[in-house]
Image 1 (cartoon, one colour):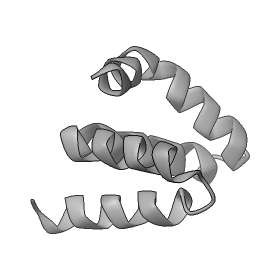
Image 2 (cartoon, one colour):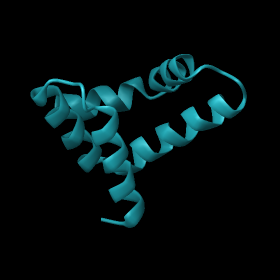
Image 3 (cartoon, helix red, strand yellow):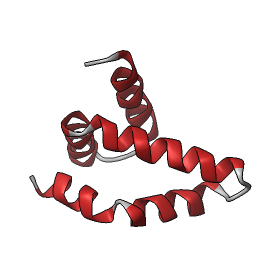
Length: 76
């Protein structure tokens, strides 16, 4: 695991702190399976935010883009 993957995991932990434990565990498991995907998602959200899009809408747009990959991760 690289340093970048470590920071992605830490960011997910912080962002998921209010989730129930079972959902948090599922999310962390998905991040461990494919940290590159979550890194790509976070970069794209940040880019949309820099362009002036509110974070919630930026997140929704990017999540829709990667919906298929995310569904596959959470099925496993």
